[in-house]
Length: 509
Image 1 (tube, helix red, strand yellow):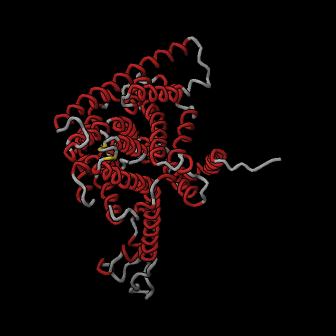
Image 2 (cartoon, rainbow, N blue to C red):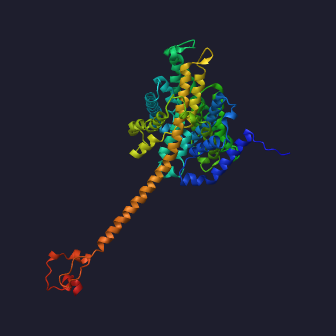
């Protein structure tokens, strides 16, 4: 006898599939008419489906275990970023990182450092009982700009009409590269917390020197440099192999556009096995893979990879809306009052990036005007990359233990990380997601007001032109405005002169 099976898998597939179907039916209207971003819509759907209808139940999926939920979210973010970063490397023109090395170096060096320090100072000043070292750790999670949210901003009708192509490419390249370069900022603080914080309790070796040795040896040499080398080698071999297979006609049309996605999954998995930076390796591999611009030119009109990317993005942001600790923003036992979180989120979005970009604007070729500089400084969204680094930090801090329990300072930092990073992520998704519609609405309102003012001025000019002139001295009738203008009272026309006398002689003859 047929039975209703409301298993978690069945419900999840039904909800996810139904949402993608409904969104697909109105996607053009939403993106090209309302200018709403996909991440914002997906987050709202996640909130409704979890906290409203209870159709999505992340706690049940992870057996009501917080560690399982963190691991699942970390895995989900790795998959989304791995695919997105390879596609980001493929989307930019060939040899772009070499031709635009100066702008990228400024944004990835002084730019990221400035964002890190600025965010940490804001947190240190607004979060009660937070040491500056802990503020550096929290700020490191939100330092990278998110490639998923950046891609939703610099692609589409609004971007094509308002954002120069050079700036679009720079934002994509920067967001792809700096996502992987968040490791040095994060582990600079985490190693100091582990080996120098709280007198290094629970660690066999302590001190700042030991922390810096780990930072240089593991983070820079193994995680960063190895990932660059590995991504370069894999990307080069993938390009050579695909071109050879294409020349031999071994690759069919269906598999050709899927190649970068498979490349991203391969790099992400192998980097995870050897313990290096999978995010940076994925971007480098994608960039080297398209170094000669051959693949991008072959797939410019193909929509397969963007479609897969869109589905992954909708899924990850719906998951974010479902797992975000919304209630804890208000009820967190007084650790961080909500008004402080709100002020902190707004200040970070306003001042985390804009002052640094403004100071470097003269050296960045793409920032040609004040408008370009403000746009570049404001649109540094915080999203999937921040969630990734949040859970990397949570896992690392969970291993700092004394007597079988997480050390007190590490546990406090975990709580602050969870609250602040999630709150800033949601602030960025909402504000950056609504910025384009708000800007478009503002321009339309200004256009209507300007048109109304122009029509009023035109009507006033017509009224003045139709106003009767002064009375004629002979007839007592009002002169036309044109005649009154031509024949002022002091023109010296005698009463004996006729109108014909005033005309040119070649007319009267």
